Figure 1 (cartoon, rainbow, N blue to C red):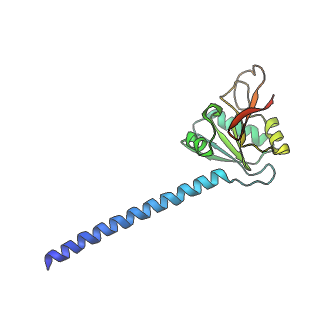
Figure 2: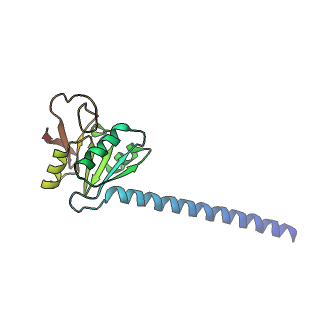
Figure 3: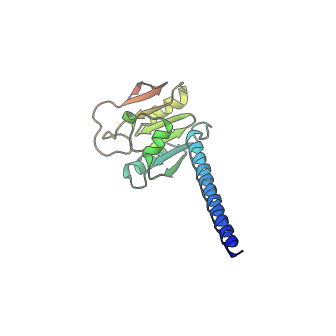
Length: 167
């Protein structure tokens, strides 16, 4: 009889381990689904509902956030330690990447995009995935240095990259 109780305890222990594992995986899965849902569905009421994902160690991101808020935009700042993961989940091509990503309505805004381009995006509401100013050009909003030439703002349109505007 003693053997049977020990075996039952082992089975109960394994059962509890499996149950705990399933619970952890479920909680992590729900958390990931909520994160992905929040990445792809920010609110879309005018120019509010802007969410900015950036690294807490990036100074130019904080400068860009201040720039947007100074322009009167209501921006929710979300610090993430893996900004690349956000970009990948949103399907932003690597050659459009910068140091931070914004979500506005159904659009992404990648990098140090000037307010004028964001305003055009809001006013026209084109059928595109988003806009980007790749890299970290000197003199762009939030970046130090002198502006050197025009900024070419790119649009992702059905997987194709095209010029959205030049500033």
